[in-house]
Image (cartoon, rainbow, N blue to C red; front, side):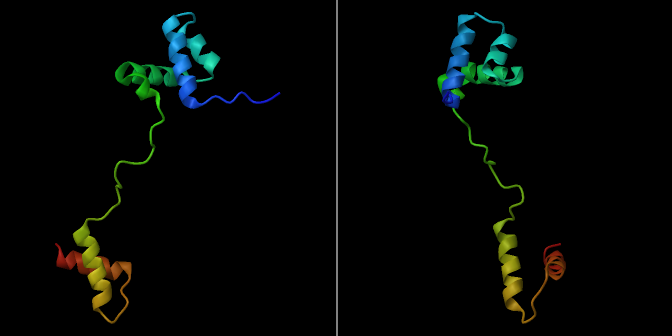
Length: 102
């Protein structure tokens, strides 16, 4: 017996359509679709707020990198590494930057 391949977007649209028909309780509807009630309420909220477009897959990529250093700091580190004849490690670079930018 072949698998029944259903795209996530199609499953969400069918879930919302069944919810709007009001044939099942919300918990029963969620169990029929194999999702938690929390996920069901999330889909329903997105549908109410954004319509069908709200049910599309969303990127999980972060909006910004929390560990990114400002350009000036990166330039200072590059400058310290290329200026001296000695190869500086992270502790020495940190100490020099702390002295340069108190």
